[in-house]
Length: 414
Ligand SMILES: [Zn+2]
Image (cartoon, rainbow, N blue to C red; front, side, top):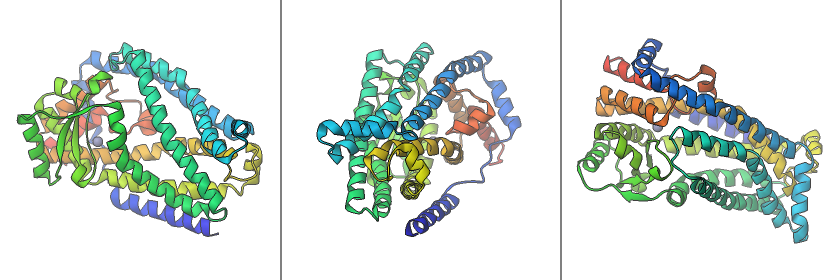
């Protein structure tokens, strides 16, 4: 009863925060401008990008299907529960072993079944020159991300099942608060602790570009502490920039690939987009929505625990036991797939707002359009992807939508 009320309050909270913070009314620029922009792109480049995505597509979908099938096979049959129990046995059925080791093995198996597709994807991105990684470097990155996931996941599992044991009737409440705090913590901690595991960051050398970027941030009223260059070229030719951290820790990060491939004006244009995210507190909004969503998910899982047919299928007698981890993973995987298009829709709107911010801040639509064309070219994005794929997966407006936004802005329409 209390749990259902709390869930209702959280859902209302998510709806209110989303309604207030997300720029819903920002439809893409006119299709005529998009088609004009598409016609402006070199034909061979468009067909190369489309060939690249056509080659990736079968593996991407197969990976989604196999990953889901693996999660469901472990979670909706007694297989996962037996696996967790078996892992606990050499440790005298110790609950910590079942909760942490058992849980991590379940997650690892769901991940490992998709590994062949990840490897195959690597061959495609190398073939098209997007990735510059050798197999060794690729495997090392993979191991690092498994290690990071194991540490975070292990702590989360330990915390979750400790709370269930300490408060068997109210764990959903503590769990919800804990999930919210974990999302907030990760949002603050990941950029500082985890990013350096994968990349080296060095302050951008003094010079006109650095001065201009800092002046831009100043003019925008978004103070930044530093401009850093990430050594992205060790793994990719793709270009990017982002702003991370809050308040006094906020910094602009530019990929070294961008410095070698884009003009200074284009770097300024991308940075202006990133400053838009900072100014509109998009990371904070994302963290808040993610935290409330995670809290709601914990309570929803608790309520799911009264569905006896589901528990019977999973071969467990309660949802708050380590043996049910596979069931939790299956439900979360399914929920992630179902909610994917909704969150992609939200991020596309937020990205479009940051684009509008960049255009307004720089007042330079021509450079913005050049930059979008370069981003699309270098990153081999499909400039005008199939509609349903865009709706299902795209986190950003398409290249032609972004170029069209610049054209509409130049005409004074936005
Ligand atoms: Zn963005």
